[in-house]
Image 1 (spheres, each protein chain N blue to C red):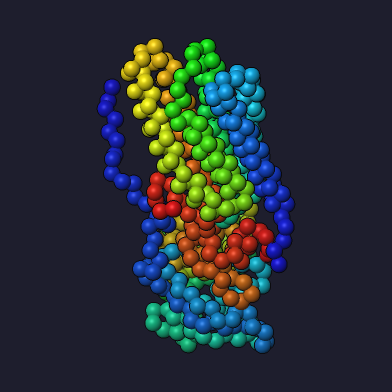
Image 2: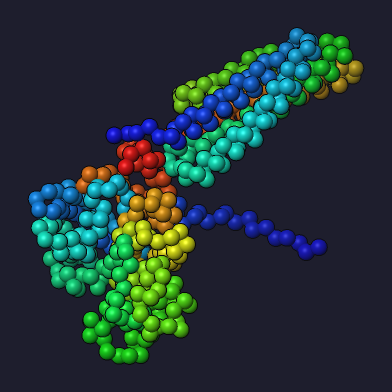
Length: 221
Length: 273
């Protein structure tokens, strides 16, 4: 009784573009962090190049969504997918920006003596894992995985606070470390924002699949 | 520079969000309605409470029974030879299937797919036809009702200078609004519309939709439509029918974003039908 629609191909294409954008963002985060942790500035140009691709996809995906709405007047699950895609598109573009910030901060830090990274390596693990799983949840429409991503955001916030405290203590002891300490705090802040964007993506997945809006604790996950 | 005052009070919810369907008064109750033609069942036991002063849209693929349902509501269905109709349609405590159809149709008016003004009558006579049929002779009252009905049907400004011109001389969209004015003239409690815009262009369709949104504060509207965007735009409640059964009935807002039944989802997203 159910028939395959041409519109399904368009929606698949939209999903594909978002996942491509998501993969680029994952790579960007991975290599941006390497600039900071491994002190290797060779990755900066890659990250910047991918950012241009992410920005182009950002515009392209918005155009696709507007075209699909205008031409098909989608309803129900189709409408929720497109609405989620518009929001996920924005979040991914911001993830790309955060990755560029991290890489650029990393390049600056290379000119300075090494400094303690606090919980940055663990923060990278959590944020990158959240982003990967949020995109997997989107790809499979997996509500349970999306819920799990949202729960992990608290861990990232905790690690950020711990890193802040550690670096503030260090800066109080050693004034020469203030600039570098501030930079590491900024990196921690960028990673925490990436985790927030992953959380938003996961919330959008739940909306897309169940039609439930759980943002701002409107409903317990 | 003048100080801008910001209203900090909470914004009221949009009307459709504020609707609490179960608390709204019911104007018509359909109970186990079964109808068909020459032994072939079309409606297989439909139960439906139509809420007062709302627009309810009935959607579903061709042959699902939506037109039969609406035609049962004012007993037009029985006018077809061999048609059968069984069950209850409660209107103000009476079973509509057991009262005089002429009296029923004063309370439950109908507008059809194709505009059908009386061809020998003027615009004014068309609107007044129901009143005259009901024995009203007071010219002043008739003139007043004609103007009021044409205004309610958003047609007055376009025809006020040619009330004595033939009704069939109007454009298709105007003729359909004339038919709505004719139905409104007898002050029905419920107005049934069977695909009222299917023969109209988008501008005329838009005018009818605007008109429905304006009159819904005064009476109950039930509209059968094939145009799902129209159902989404004009109605507060939507009924989805399939093969003679009511699959889903609920708030339009919810049905078009989060339908409860997979079959509704498949239909409104164009996967079948």
